[in-house]
Image (cartoon, rainbow, N blue to C red; front, side, top):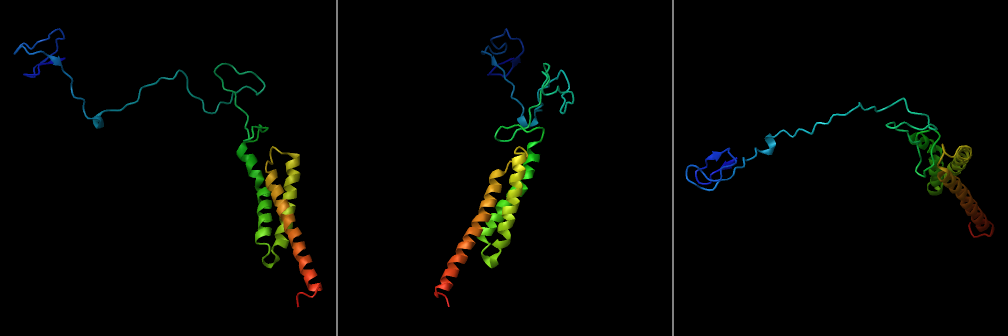
Length: 181
């Protein structure tokens, strides 16, 4: 569409170049777009050729080749990249509770254990729970991955008893030598 800048007459004939009323050169007429808040921002329509399946049950076995268009599920993997034998990652991580308990008891025996000799209870508990977890880790390392936590608990429990023995020996030598009365 074209419009005359002088008289604002609009012409739909694209072959006209001059206004028929006053002879002015016609310019391209551009309608002002309506405000964007009144426009319908409808998304583009997309037609899918087949319905989407979110949980297909007809996957081929892991050893068989897949057909074109089918997705073969990847095995679950832990952060190190070692695949689990059908055990989801979150389920395997739940079994580190005993190792975490061992480490917490060991740290508690070193820090709070000196108050009222509470470490005499926390130290052995850290050693025992850590040892139980290390045996489980040795039999199935994929399901029990927190070996370092259990080792930390066992070591801190042993360190408490070594330090306690040193304190008792130093205290006993001081009493026997007559330094403490």
